[in-house]
Length: 204
Image (cartoon, rainbow, N blue to C red):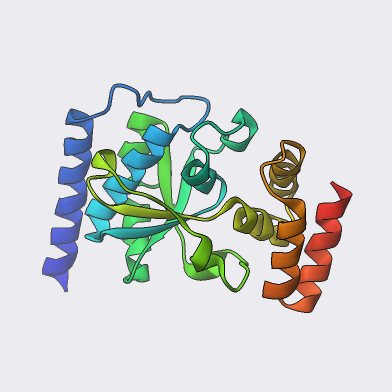
């Protein structure tokens, strides 16, 4: 067990050093809003740390899977909520290696937040709507991003002020089809949850 932990720590240290060497010129530390390239960097790094080719991206930055140039109001968070599959428990290793206040965060100005599947309340068929990011910049690691409708559902279910404001932007900028969103929420979520968040959606 000790040897395994030491190897994992060694991989994380080497990955951080390597990331500094190969840093993409478009990734600037302490940038105000996250970019698609920065998300791709996090996907690449997280995949290498967890030794996986697949990650689920939830939260605000998942919008970069569907939109290359989203409204800046949707990109103010510099954290990427994600977890690896199939070994979800490796999210802790990601969080400890390139999470908040890590050398990675200090160097690049953004970071990964390792979470679990239970973090977000999502419609039943959310996996069918995932949008994948996988290219040379991710080194082939697949980052499966929530569809905007599922982002909206999870944020309305959370109900925090910043989450509600995020959905307000999605709605006002017509980035989600309201009729389709309502239908998905009503058919794929428990009735009580669906009623609460569709009412909230209509009020925005």
